[in-house]
Length: 152
Image (cartoon, rainbow, N blue to C red; front, side, top):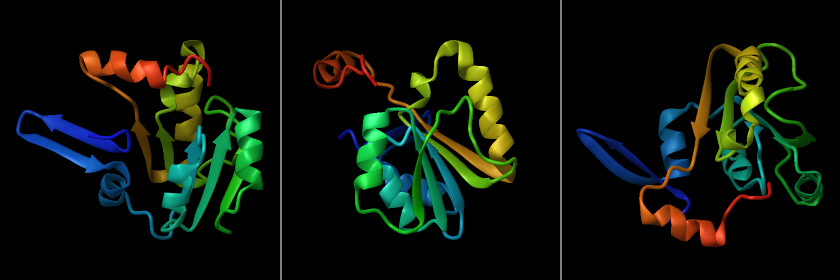
């Protein structure tokens, strides 16, 4: 399993899949207005933009945001500064809100605010998609050697 794959494990289901393939199966991306929170290097942003109508990608790291804004990106993508706890968008603006491995970066004291904001900007029947790194056993200790997330 690689860092770009997800494993779904339930008592009767075990599956390893590329995260974007899984996302494509679970969500209706064509025509969707998407908000990505904590977009980082915007790899997923670019993938989602291939199918979505529009993507607003927020990032709190100003250096990474500047890199994203300077990069060649699809016309339906816009990058802006912002975090999950204070989303500068109108109520019911997005069909889908996504967080790829970034929810755990929201300060614990602001988690309720972040979830309330996500709910506020979702359209009725909208979907929030969260993908968080959860590694079992020794793999977590090994991964931490290369990607410790002490700085965001």
